[in-house]
Length: 191
Image 1 (cartoon, one colour):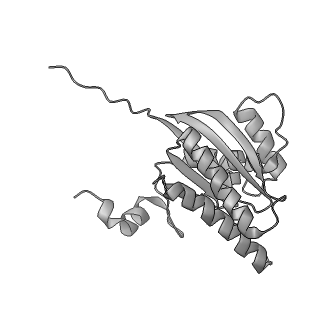
Image 2: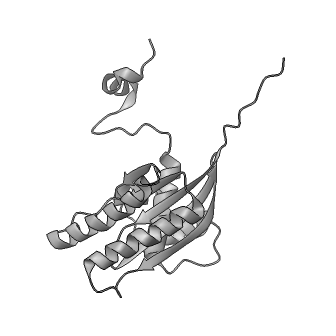
């Protein structure tokens, strides 16, 4: 009797998005096990559209087009950075929501990561600058030069962060060690 061997290294495509209302970055990577490779990255320029509503429409259309072209297995977004300007936060939240809706309409799972977690995952420093993130991505993806589009490299970093954290248990609060995990996740323990 032959035993069927499962391939644990399933190929996946991850779309990373750095939400914005002037420029929105996106980055796509293909992963297989621990390996990853760059598929595409770029930006969606939105400044030329006169109203916020038209910008949201364009975000939805462009993200939908990317989803249809690459058919990603998951979408990772950078969570908005909380600033002092409430109007800017509201607009950024709407832009993120529209990108999320495009993915959810196709039943593609979405995950959010804080800017600090993305930077920590890619550079080892949660306070790294956009330029430092871009330089690290140049090294990780063997790019010939440092990418100039920092919104695009931020999105690429979000996709890579998702790859690094995919399948890991995400804990909240001060959890440390197995004892805390067991206490916080009794339903996940086999008895």
